[in-house]
Image (cartoon, rainbow, N blue to C red; front, side):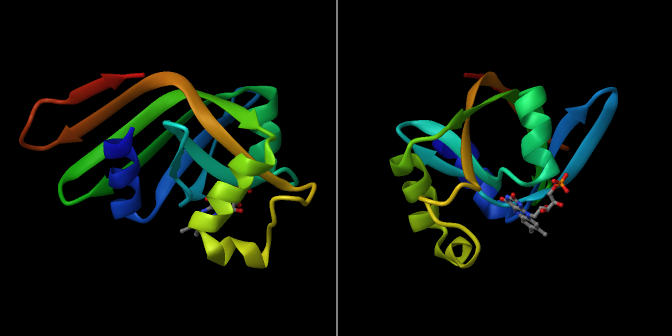
Length: 130
Ligand SMILES: Cc1cc2nc3c(=O)[nH]c(=O)nc-3n(C[C@H](O)[C@H](O)[C@H](O)COP(=O)(O)O)c2cc1C
């Protein structure tokens, strides 16, 4: 998971896909942190992305850097603990302009299980199941 988190951070931005009914939805995301050994992302409960994950927690993300790209496909679990939100916000202090760990909107979620694939034009895909 550290390798995945570093890859995503090095990319700077990844694209998170959710499902709404039979319609895929995708948007840029940047948050990716390890807390208690799990990969967490952050959003706001008021966003459509949050509502889509609440209805169907299967997601996939993709990012690219330096000739390599990554896919993470899995399920996301909301973690309502203040300490999990605090960890995310402490590691991303710029988010504190919009969020704090005690508000009703801040949401952090971790990947429960899934599959990571790192691809490149030159090497065979590297697959990590978690
Ligand atoms: C580079 C970049 C990184 C972003 N990172 C996040 C993020 O980590 N979490 C988040 O909730 N929104 C993030 N956003 C904003 C979302 O992309 C934006 O709110 C989007 O519209 C949410 O999807 P939705 O409209 O389907 O709810 C980011 C935007 C950009 C441009």
